[in-house]
Amino acid sequence: MEQDRTWDEKLIRILPAFILVYCLLQPVLDVLGYWQQIWEQSNVLTSAIRVVLLVASVLLGFLLSDRKRYYFLLAGVLALLGGLHVAANLQGTYLSPMTDLANLARIFVLPVTVCCFITFLRRGGARVFRAVKLGMAADLICILLVELISVATGTDRGTYVKEQIGVIGWFIWGNCQSAILSMLTPLVICWTLDRWKDRLLPVALVTLAAEAALFFFGTRLAFLSMIASGFGISVCMLILARRRWKQTLIIVLITGLLTCAYPISPAARRVSSLSDSNLQNEQTFQGVQESIPSEAPAVVSGEEDESENLETVYRYYFWAVVDRFGIERVAEKYNYTLDAAVLGNIRTCKRYVCEMIMEDAPSMCSVFGLNVNEYVIHVRGDEGRADYDVSFEVENDFYGIYFVLGIAGFVLITGFLLYFGLRALICVIRNRKVYFTIQMAGFAGAYVIAMVHALFTTSVLRRNNASVYLALVLVGIWYLSRKNESKEAVPSLSPESALPERMIHGKE
Image 1 (cartoon, rainbow, N blue to C red):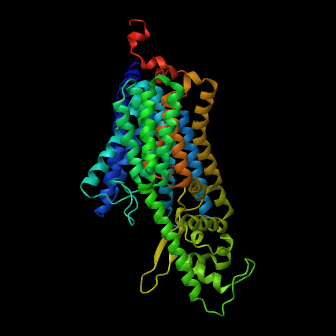
Image 2: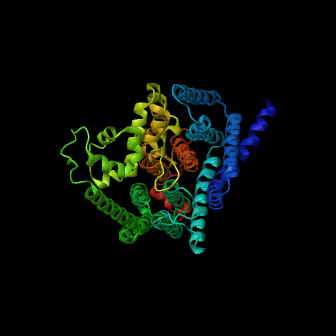
């Protein structure tokens, strides 16, 4: 028994270092993945390191946990969900099962990582929590350095490669990187406010650097996240620490200036580019209409069974989809519209394709999800080009969870995510003085921003380079809402906390 206790103490002592290494490896692995793609090398190395990190986290968490039943319960739920998913797809043609299972594993990484890190925080307490915050601050610094070096060396490919818009650095997935930067910004600004309670320069530098990264990134979600982080934290500071008005003012000024600079931002250029693309679609549509023979019947309403006009336009935009599902079914999905902006929207097309695939699948698939390979449509090459495959996997995490794991998986994942947000909200409502702190504001802001990204992009729940950050956000919220840890983990941010200690105790 004494030997077991000593072993546990040794493991607990290494937890802060393990957390820091775990965090610092995330941007490093992302950069390695980028160069592997540029040099056309296999991603075996980075994938293997991620697997090792996950296995190490599970083993360490299981060994330290005094509630091992939760690990068995989680393993049982995930195994049952995965097994029923496989059983549902075996009713049809189950293509490339290993690829499908690997896709499921990417989704399951999030709850597994959260379970392990909750154990670390339960056993390591405030030391581990400080390591989590420090690790995420270090990640933001690494990302900013990579972006600066890539711009300085002319190796930044741009967030939107074709238009050469935005600064992304040596990172592959634009949506993921947008979510990562957006989550880290409120966390690191709040960490700085908590670390330097009476200093103005660190707060100004960190706020400027973090928000500038979002400003120059180029996505609209990143720009909106910058606004939400800056002004949201400012409001919290006005409520929690009014005497620290200088720090609040500098955050407001930086956020306000960057917001006013929107017309010259990469995000504005991207919106303009989309407008030009829609105009081009409209012009193309007019050209298609003009090419239709004059004897072709006009489209009068959506009630016509067949129309050469309608079919010609639809086949121009997504003829492979029409080949698979038929013109009538595709047109019905689009409510027989001929609006070029709607027909040219790739996100809408992918969603409709997945919905039609789900409709054709066995009924059990609607409950437990589709094989990820079902989203691939074989396209016939034209003008001498070879045939090729196109994936119509949706560009939205919550929709994606539904199609991959069905209603059952969607309910479980959504409930899992809502638990942490509702837990924090209930704690703040019940005892605002204890739980409503600048640290909670930072983690809650990152949580909300992550959920917004998951709602609009495929960036957080189904890609592990971003889901690990969400896992850290969730466990941070969990820790800050613990009754028995609140005083230890949450330093006071009352107006007096900004004063020197000797003044608080009446020594000056």
